[in-house]
Length: 337
Image (cartoon, rainbow, N blue to C red; front, side, top):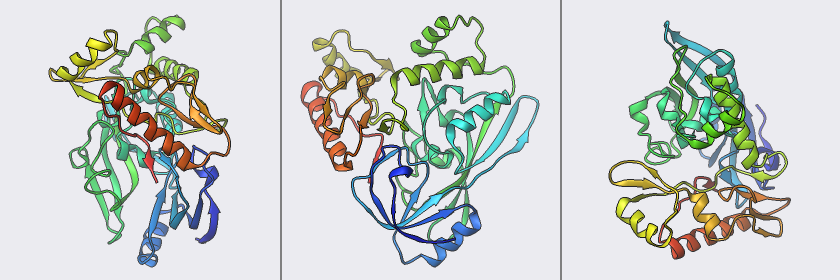
């Protein structure tokens, strides 16, 4: 283990922001992680995974712990299900493909979500009608203060829409080292509720879809709408889809009769943030080296050498405009650092 100084994080965050780490260390084992937490206890810490869900607005004046724990293993299985444990440093999409290649179903709708396994529970990642909590079994994490390894069940994690206990009460107190998911081995429960998937399957002339077909459809949809971070800096969806009351939605419909929505419950409705942003006129707007993607209004982009502060200021402008026009608050999905 070697602590490096004044390291650029540009290649370690999908926005491609050239922020610097005061100190940086690459961690490849749990033992090394525990040792660093013990020896660097007096120094501020910043845990870095895949760098896909954050916007760096400043240099990191802390020890950046880059978590690169690798490995996938079977914890247990029966004739119907398998419980897989994946280490925190495994790439999420590569893990999805691994599962599909082994005919393990349940996460195919979440294909091509950027980032690593370790951050998936923090955000309760999800896409096209499926969330991590739907297949989550448990995770292991290290207590930053005591270096004790703790086992968290699904109930312990208190999952909600893009939320978990790790973003709330336990924020900054634990480092997730591995995640266990319970997946199906056959008779997969396919989630086709989102129209975009059905439409894409029809285009592909798929009548009886497999989990691989669904994954391919999702990949095709995402690639048609979302820019590749290797070409244009971005962090995927920057904002959460707001959930409002039915009465609030009826007020919205008075001015916008065709407003798209998804019924969450008898009292709540989810409105696509992308539609709000596009309707407000931001889709495709560019401000020098940064802006809003021209194919998906949910995505803020770095076209070259934008500063994190520039993108953050744009995000605030969008939030203020949405509130003024629609009287709806939209929250960032991306963590602002």
